Image (cartoon, rainbow, N blue to C red):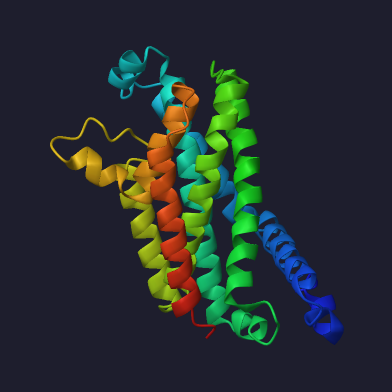
Length: 265
């Protein structure tokens, strides 16, 4: 808690208007980022699982139909899904579980005595998730490059808006779950959501092969919209405004719900 200690020690820093509010959010973001980086077990899982998914998809024939459709290699199709999985793992599972147990052990009750507020907590955690996702992007990008992935500068730049919106939506979802149910239930719920959204939620694998209205329904989910937007940006060099709009709507709705229903203890 050393990152927010100065804010507790200096009452004037709490009442100076917008600038201290920004500093509080940044301080909370720094604290959350360092906490995640110091958790070696969690960090390994956040890197290991997406890396295993990348290698598994790149060295099997599972993605061949989509690779043929896009006219690219397996690793080119795999990378957008792996990046979506990174955001899903870090924002939903990582922050959801950590926040649930912080709430159980009274850490959040301590934060409730500070001027940070629910909105500041959500923004600080989203900032930390964003930093971790950037690090994951660099690691996965380096691994993908070794396997022949070459998205170009345009592809990378066009993937960033979707990742930013995806981080916001999944962080809010993780906090909504962690702030409304018990820590043990949070562990079960976020892991179940992670499995379902990663497997059939359109993040790791394209959704457009589903029959009937399946594609539309999956891409209306934040996971499906994120996967589709990343594939449009990286593979087609197009900014998918409809999918980004879906992510923005989810981010706003989940963020408002988390701010409204989040319980500190």
